[in-house]
Image (cartoon, rainbow, N blue to C red; front, side, top):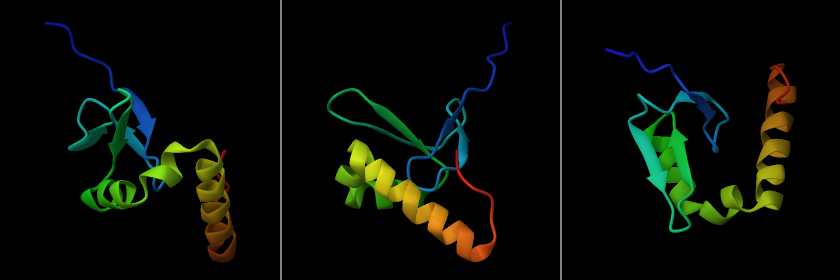
Length: 79
């Protein structure tokens, strides 16, 4: 019996690491792109604001917002 290795991907909403194989929250879009989420809340936020997370400029906007939030709270930078 072969054990599948964990494949870690980033949640597009909060940038958390998520295991593709065990994630309970996943969304496949019309263009066959698959997104994995750490929680139901992140999945729902993505569904409401899909254009922000799918559009490259939207991803940059989200990254800047998260980095600004982390700077205010003293957290680590996102790479």
